[in-house]
Each structure stands twice: as structure tokens, then as C-alpha cells.
Amino acid sequence: MWIWTNEVQPPTAGGVVPVQARPFVKVLHANCSLDHVTVIMGCDNFCTLYVNGLVVGTEKNGASTNAQRYTVKFPPTHEVSIAVYAAQDPVTKLAIGLIISGVAWNSNQIKPIEIPFVTDSSWKTFAADDFDVRFIEPHFDVSDWSDALVLGAYGVSPWGSFAIPTTPTTQNGPLVAVTGLPDAPVAGPANVITLNGQ
Image 1 (spheres, rainbow, N blue to C red):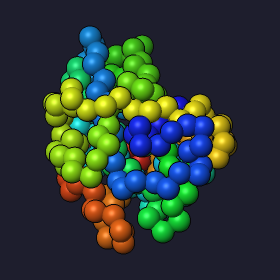
Image 2: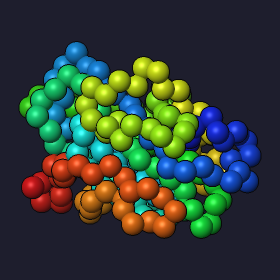
Image 3: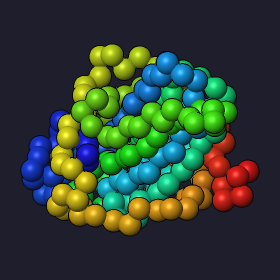
């Protein structure tokens, strides 16, 4: 599902002047230990992805038609924090939205139990400019944040469908120095798996 804060109302998402950058958080809880997560992400149209408080990668333009794919390795845990700092291009001011599909698992299991997740109303967000930049950190309290607003399913206008990447996206740092947007929270790099498994 495409999501945003309740500042945008469906089904007219394509014609709404967007707001400033917003935070989005999803915490995965599992009975089994997890040590990997794969995320396929699209955003209209700037965003930085964090896993367990570390930077995975940034999309600087066009993520609504060019999805990204990341696999992240981390120490075994029963709780995985997925956080996104997302914003529309402050110049174009067109449609606005975030869409993610992913799965977490334990690489040490012969037949790992997969924990799937997608963007939906269970994601938490903060519909104001003064959000706490520590939202990227594990165990950050989002209990008083709002549920994300669902704008429509994958394929809905104005975004349509896009090619799902089968190879990893190159890791880069947090989104910074975009005129009209505050910089994304700074954090260390996540352990992103590349083509050769390193």
C-alpha cells in the first residue's frame, strides 16, 4: 500500500500540495531470532531508509518509478526497527507517498521462518515538522504517533506499477543538502549485502 500522514486525503493524492519531510516507523516482533531483512522500497520522491538505527540507503529522485532493493544483515534479535525519512521534492510539489514490501528471516536456519511486512495503516508516523529525529533508533517510543494513512494499493494512480529490482541497490548515506528540506537523521552505515554477499 502507498501510505503517508493524514495530511493527505485519498483518492486525490496526486493533486495535493505535499507537506515537509515525515518519519515512518514499523517495528517487527518475532518469536524466532532474526538476522536479515530485505526491503523493496518506492517513494515519491525523496527518502532515507534505516534498519535498527543505521543508514541503509537513500533515494534522491524518482523512487516512485525506480524502486530500490536492499538486504541488511544485523546481530540476531527478536525485534527489527524499520524507519524511513520521506519527503516530496519541494520544487515539483506533486503526488506524495511511500510504499514498501519486505521480509525478515534468520540466515542460520535451514528452513528460515520468513516474517513478511508491507506499508499499511500499522506503520506509525508523525504529522508535524517537529518530530524527534531519534525515531530511527531501536526501541523509540511511537505509541503516541498516528497510524499511517493508506492512499491506495500498489498500481494505483498516479504512481502505477514499476519494475521490481532483482539486484541490490548501491548503499549511500542519509539524505542531505536538499533545498527546502531538513537533512535526514545522521547515523552509521548498516551492513548492506552486495552481489558477492559481502
